[in-house]
Length: 323
Length: 134
Image 1 (tube, rainbow over the protein chains, first blue to last red):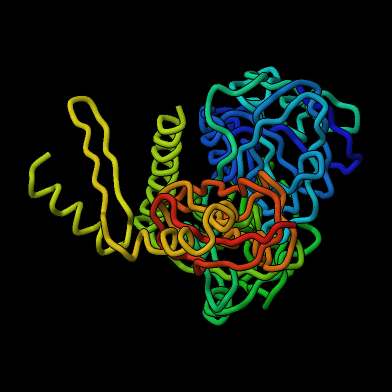
Image 2 (image 1 turned 45 degrees about the vertical axis):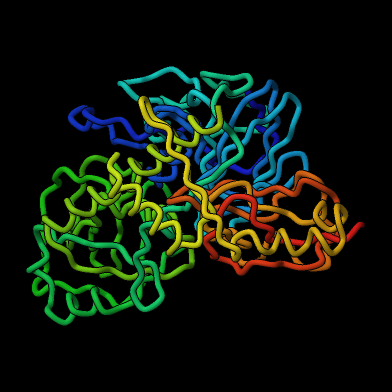
């Protein structure tokens, strides 16, 4: 059990997401950086998709109401437990009464506080993720507030080793273009309907993550993407990662809390394997896009799974060696 | 495990300057130790000159891996020369594959010298930092 001490808003309980309910108009939600969520859970010996607390604003403070092992992954913050510095992407045993402070990130934008066993909130439609639009899931369907108490499924002293960490996906799966974080994009249905110059400029240009960016979507700023002729598209199903281009030509990338349908023309889709990179791109930062094929997109997903499997294997070995 | 595999392991240990390796699994317990001067040297040189005292103030690696003096996600070294080191303080990291294992100081003191460059592959028990009495 932990108690939220900080008043900063928008921290939510998230797991991998709520799949299979798009037909009811229920979006997937889930962690913006699902690799960080999986890593934190692997360090604790949890199932990869166990629920954790996603923290987008700092500083963030919690008090441990009882002993509990925890891991902080994702954005590298200035973190400390009762004043003792903690390394990024690290698992630690907390004792009753200790206070965890997460300061501003030096790298990335969202941190994940994972608890032993996972965060214990009721499952709704098969997931513990907070569905902000529908106001259900997570803790009472809302962001965490000062004074909230959140329970872990396996509190107490951990039987598994604590006090070790992992090389972050930023290093292990680095992808940059001209020094900027890059994401791979599959061209989508209306790709061919945009001007050749616009398409070339999309791949060649830098894109700024504007302040109108959150769990619902990222609005980017760059050279406008213009259509060959005005387009009217009927509303259709969309998923996280879809890049829509409204009339102004400034694209919107749908993120985890995206609504399940939309009517803007689709330029492309950030591949599932790279959505975590966007989830860690801070507001005001710049990103680049790399065109990729369906086969490359599938291969990228396999790279991610291989990395997680390797971390899992090494963590298990470390567990055996520490007995 | 064949003799050929054990020979290959010995070659790899030599190439990577590791002090040894131990493999345990059902029906197998293999312990390889390299008796090469260069591995043991830093510890042995220190001992005869100023017995005990110097040796106690040397921090030694707790296992095999790549010794990191800076966390890969941070810019500053975990502890800089001249600064005070508390017992139990994180002074370095041992990278084994994608895992980062903590290297904590066994004693309190002032960091006098770093004996190993960041990123060096180290074996067990190699001296990598020297402390002065605080």
